Amino acid sequence: MESSSLSVVIPVYNEEENVGPLHAQLQAALANWPGDVEFLFVDDGSTDATLELLKRAQMADPRIRIAHFRRNLGQTAAMGAGFHLAKGRAVVTLDGDLQNDPGEIPRLVQMLADYDVVCGIRTRRQDTWWKRRSSRIANGFRNWVTNDDIVDTGCTLKAYRRECVERLELYNGMHRFLPTLLRMRSFRVVQVPVSHRPRRAGKTKYGTWRRMKKGLADVWAVRWMKKNWIPYEAVLEVVETPENLEVKSQESV
Image 1 (cartoon, helix red, strand yellow):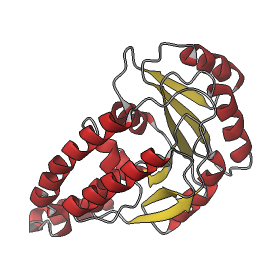
Image 2: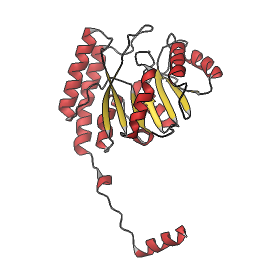
Image 3: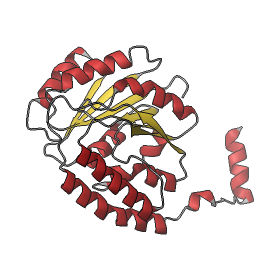
């Protein structure tokens, strides 16, 4: 995207050990960004020092914006709030646990010149064997049910044109299906390999069984939505009356 303003949306929940290092990596990765940048942290009701550390970082860096839930609502809610508040023409989502590399952001945003959504595929995943295996099974099931080909729905690192997400209405768990939901709306989606790093501090917030159970149940809701989606905008034509055309012509003078 040409001279793009950028919003980096980062949901965080009890990530006090990662706030400082992540901010430093964002600063380094986007030091030469040609447009305006904001780091939009959405604190999902953290009970540790995450919010306080974010406020301290904000005092030193005015590019930081903070949204805070008074209680934990989950990753979908945090992403939805971030999308609503983001000001940039390009919006990138990033995990707050340092497993996503902020250095990937410029490359993904650059691809928005040709696509509407750029989805990361984690290569050489730094997770347990069981977590990788369960993700592979869940992704295969989702794609089979929804007739899609998204390789890594669990990768938070994605870049969007603003128009893709500014009017999205998300329900709990739907962040896992964003590429499918956006394809339904005729947006151009591409998938690219991105690096993945081991978690070095803090703890994962979602157990494997809990994540699989919720995700697999949501698949059927997305299938229903996809089957019953009405793409009226693709075939809609507004026919103006002669009177309306005359009024518009006078207004343009």
